[in-house]
Image (cartoon, rainbow, N blue to C red):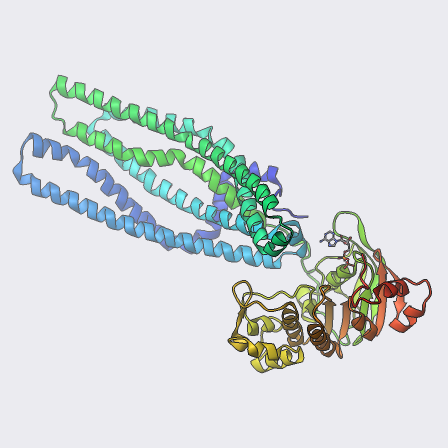
Length: 599
Ligand code: ADP
């Protein structure tokens, strides 16, 4: 199974920095070519004006202060003002354009990752915790923005600025400038060794940070259980450990990446002190005007920041590229269930479903279904019953091709579902899951997910059939009332009826129902049951049944135990079978309304 958390760690960590950079630019470069060009132009202006500001220091000192040329004061001052204004404007346009490109890029990757996640098989999500995944994706996408701004700013601005300033230094004092050629490489070598450890620590840090956020999210989702079981302290302790661990790793990362700082600072100190000492002696001994030396030192001081950033470039890029790689791990995940190139559209008439000798395991080698064979007749209701863990929900998942069987076939109206497109298969199916999921949006939106082109009238009709119309009208905004995380809270029974309305709107010939095990109050139960009966009519229904009334009304009952069919019949025939599993389960269930599913 694909696990983002450990996917090919070795191979990826050993990957080439340049290849990831190249990929990011190949994928996005063209899109932003004009904007990049504009940014580079701004950066050139910034570099030129910076170099000019250093260069003019010589005239400031020599002409104004040394030669006392009053006539030049205004000219030089205006030139400096002009240079700074130009530089300010260029900086402004460069920064806003870069930020805009960055935001756009983040949005592009968010869209790509989301649509990739949507098209990824269900198994990926059972392997990865959702909260952690979301936190990791968000941190990593930021990393891609970082790659872009780092390379552009460092290469275009810092590098060009540095070149400009080095030229100024040469023009002022060639001997002294040679020093920069010794210092430059020194800096780069000093920093190179640091970047080696950055990769593994960064990866670890991203995981730990994501774990902290993921754990918090999960805790918030399960807050009622946590309080009911007074688990607060235990959980707090547990998350405190993770937080501490994450903090330590963050500190480690800081220490490793900040090792660059003292190295660069000290070298810079040496350079400035050396320049002053050398320049001072020369000025005194050779009685030279101090302008050139001032211009040189100004250029050196200006050069310090870009040189520092360039020296850190590799370290920062290593960090950012780790993030980018993690995003590509998701984007490059192979779809294990891709439709075959010869896949055809599923054509459904009655919707008869047949399992033919199906073996299945969840990838861990232990078989959940073994040689399972049964037929669910078209337009009839087939109830699956059996002990918990016997494989009933798995059957429902396999019909929708969330997973593929290890061997055997699943046929709908005689067509093997492995040979049809997944979308045509799923369009013929309406699914009501155990948990009634409602998504961010209005009640109307939530029902419309069943079929996007459904009219409002059809939606209201479905809600009426699902016994939901009444309570929906009682909500503040009726059908437009928002539900989901920040919307109104509906009761369990109400949510179920909304999800039944969604299934009705879908108007598919096949209905799959994983009946909720949680008991509702009698009135709710009756309304849900009634709604279900209406939607089952005329459809091929397979229901994982927990309620006796559903089972009694089913046209056919299939008793599953340990991944195999053990009995088939109707309530009447099976109840009479002495020593039969159904008769036994049914006996246990007497007195309780939903006890056919036993542990
Ligand atoms: P039922 O619906 O009858 O209670 P299920 O079909 O949910 O049974 O589960 C059958 C078996 O498959 C159980 O042993 C369960 O632990 C296992 N199982 C279910 N889902 C998964 C999964 N995503 N990964 C691994 N094992 C699973």
